[in-house]
Image (cartoon, rainbow over all chains, first blue to last red; front, side):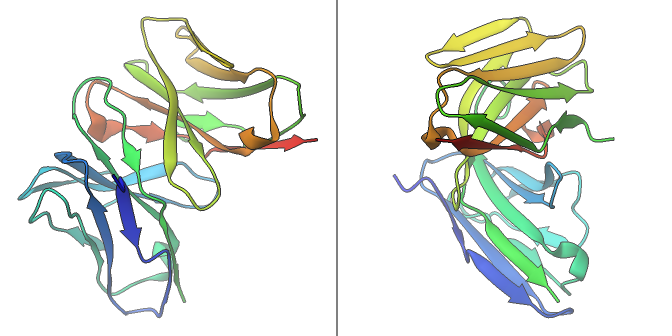
Length: 114
Length: 111
């Protein structure tokens, strides 16, 4: 199993550009998450999904959109990129929503908006 | 302040014990986690503890939880250079969509 994979690893965007961060998991997990991590801060939840076709906002959803058309994929879309979106983005998946289930993380995407 | 706080840096000598501390604010936190992140990799779960426990030991790792003070610690015995990484503390209630992470403690182990 590859686990959770994310592409790209690094990206530089100009202000106002758009991009999609890709996330794929091969563990057949229903639950998937997008986090961002700013320097010196903890991870903040952007969006999550409890299954194909179902998504919900996390703590910091503004400026982002997600979709979940398959169990495996959970792309994160940035429209009109802003410098405030410079961050490291982590995708995660989990076999359960309630209970002690751990979250499995991808390696992260480092995004710079200039 | 942040929901989960931890110091940002810790440096120890190889063979010494490392203690990484964490405090959290939500008294309803049910599960408390320690994740490890190595360079270029995602976070990997090291261990977790239920809020009704006060200690958990797993080989070189000891987790202590003081629920009254909302304080969690991770002790690594006989720290090795391979333990150099960033360690994240996390707390959540019953559901996985309310996980709160600390900023991570960068542990440096000197030979």
